[in-house]
Amino acid sequence: MNTFAPNSAELRTAVAFRKATASNPSGNCLHVAELADGNVAIRHSDPAGPAIICTPGEWNAFTDGVRNGEFALSA
Image (cartoon, rainbow, N blue to C red):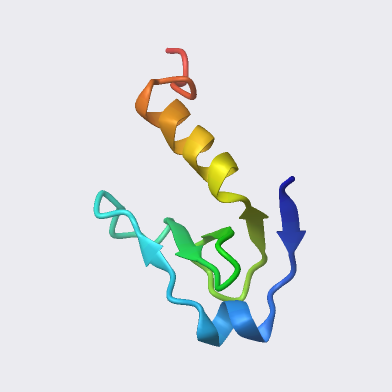
């Protein structure tokens, strides 16, 4: 189950978020971090914002879908 987590001290300081190497220079990026409990936090590049927390299985399903083009926008 996905959880919408408001910004917390853990998400601001204790978690090492990383961004995609294909990010644009404007700073509008998706950041991802593995949490101590094994779940995955996903947030916008704004460190003051909230995060979506998902299980490793949900994260794997999402990234598989991205790789397979399931989220491609139609022209």
